[in-house]
Length: 306
Image (cartoon, rainbow, N blue to C red; front, side, top):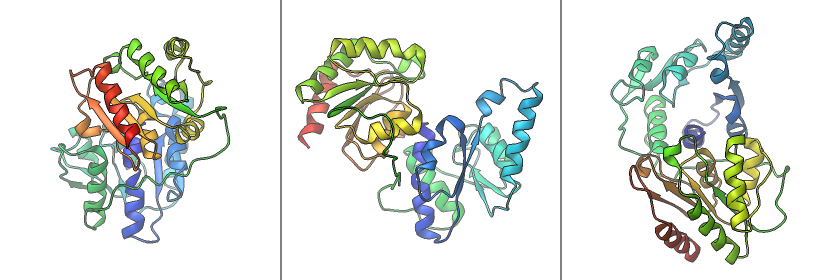
């Protein structure tokens, strides 16, 4: 999900420099709601590669992949831009039957993927993921690297599940256990939200994450929302007074929506994928540098003061 969020500003950049451009987006189905919220994206094409890759011997899988390939070739594209730089994204980019552009072997995440591109470009791996995406698009589409702040451009739906009072969001779960932050620290953050007059909402996405969310909420007079799809969760994120979360997709999405967001990093350097957005954002921690509770609460107070 984070990769999808980081790529969003490319849409506004393209429209600013190439008025009238038509942009379609190929994306994993669980995250399709994100580009669908961008008015600059004409058509979203969901893929279920994560599911299909586990069922490659099934005729139904090949039928579904064939249908997606037909959709990709329904009308001709001038260019296919692979912003993810993985072997799977490069292979699917080729299915559109148009020239494919991406990173070169030295700057791509999976070097083998560069073999499938007709056009490549060198983009530093030492810059933030948002800037990498913007730079790749600028090089291949022939305009200068934009100097204005990234415009994520999301228009959030207003319907769906809605909390009953002012709330802050806690996002304590992540895809890998190395990213996790101690439960007792989350409770302290939740209690500070209560002092602010907010209900701490503790977010979860998978059944195995729900028990942690409920335990944190029970210890800080918080609440746990029901299971929400990505589009439904976006509406909740957009209404939060403050978001505190791990380096995970929903935290990045909250920042892209302009909410005050504090990202906690326990297994990744924030310099390359730190919290980015138009609101008050901050990142703390790093690889092998689990931030303390006091450090996080101090940064939280600084955000409130701003």
